[in-house]
Length: 310
Ligand SMILES: [Zn+2]
Image (cartoon, rainbow, N blue to C red; front, side):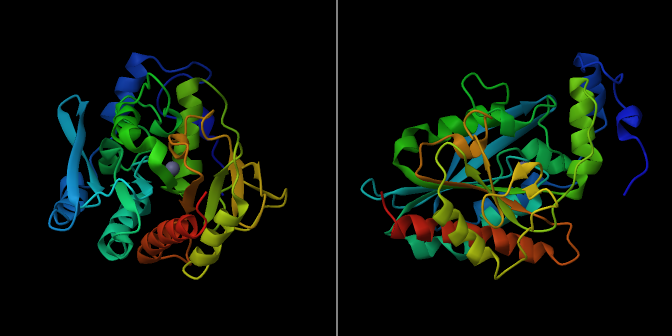
């Protein structure tokens, strides 16, 4: 709706010139803490210690700030069972990804005891959680950085956490949001950082999923869509039959080459992989609905995987 040319007006850097260290430093200095990882996330994780194993899998060094990284594991862990991986907060600003993962643990995880081992990393990028941003401390998107010699310590730490279980994980749900601020702030920031022009795009109104174009699982994705549709509305395709520039392959589903793009959902060879995209800015969706949609998606994904083993 804006009439402003955000490319020319992006407050950091020179249009057409990629950022250097001075611009990254200026960007970092402009990112203020808006909420507390310790109060809103770590307290909830700590409260699970009586029921689950809570493991500290790393610490992020962000200048003056250190962020411990935590994951929640089934206890007991049974090596004969399949494993399910849940990741949230790879993009720290995507609130329901974090709180949906925590809601899943609080409300639903116990019902999977004895059927599947759970490994949940609820807040992969805590510096960004506190600043409600997409990038990490170094202005790097963790969700393009799941690759060898990753430039993002958040991504490297998660890959190390998952490595021992990697080949036993049968289902991975990576929980995200698509927000209005993607178009108003983060896409213009990305263009400015890389010295490119920002091409305006659309934000879909509703929930959608990203499948793996290298090994798509349409029935699995549709099972999740059907479950989430009872909680919140599914994003329609736009006039080009696309969602965020990708062809809609089935209702509410687009495909990406996950591994090639360095996306979190591609870090395991799991048969069933999905990236959820909740739309929190819809006038038709409350924060509670968004968290519930994420937890519902996780349950539907695990249920399908257990009902359809390889
Ligand atoms: Zn995201």
